[in-house]
Length: 304
Image (cartoon, rainbow, N blue to C red; front, side, top):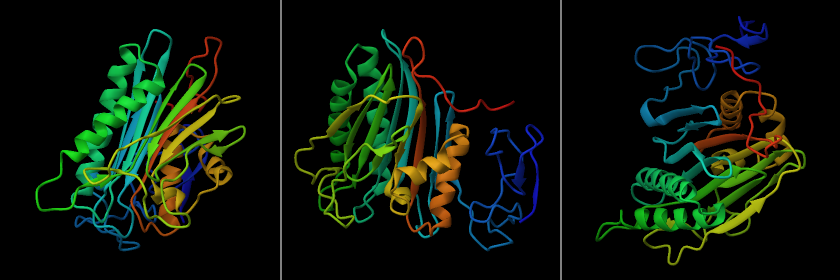
């Protein structure tokens, strides 16, 4: 592969890269999401590897000062059924970073609608609850309740119910609060990297035992509050990533020491290079403990 030096930091980058993974500097050209070369024809196909390039929701990136996310259709699916949402909320105690990832259940109708509805509903509910003074665990329970109701309302007579999984994080002060239903995961990457969630699935399979949807029965979220020992990253992801790379240490090796956006891009690319058989969605939320015990970015800042 052809490489060149990043004009901002001098690190070697592959031709076609959109951002330098070392410093986050924008490199201009957006290459093929599969092989990285910039030879993408007007018909949307890569002239090097032949892969059809994503459009619209097929490939989505979020970048805020407090974190970043990437969601990709993958190499086998015809559409992206994952969804993500990210924001920062000012509370009386601190600034909390709120992220949500939902994975539409492919065997249900309109899974992409279910995941997007759940993610958007939950993010709005979490922000509102936190702004009004609710603690993160209470806010998470209410967000899951409202998201479950919104997804259930999508069901139409005579058809199976749209469905999705759910995982969220509220990172602020000295703690991170995780809520989940299904098999989308949260990880802590840093000192003592670990999986923060437990899959609602039959052991050894991807057969869900809990989800959001009209046919889900009573939805009772799992909630865990975690106090990190030091700075690191909260990672939310769909099984399109952890299905290939479930080990926290392996994910940390790829995600740390990069900007949030570059880290998210690296992780998505890792899944695509492993086969990309599923949609893959990643949210990266840097977390640290400053003097005021507020969330701080521990990644190097991007150069403009």
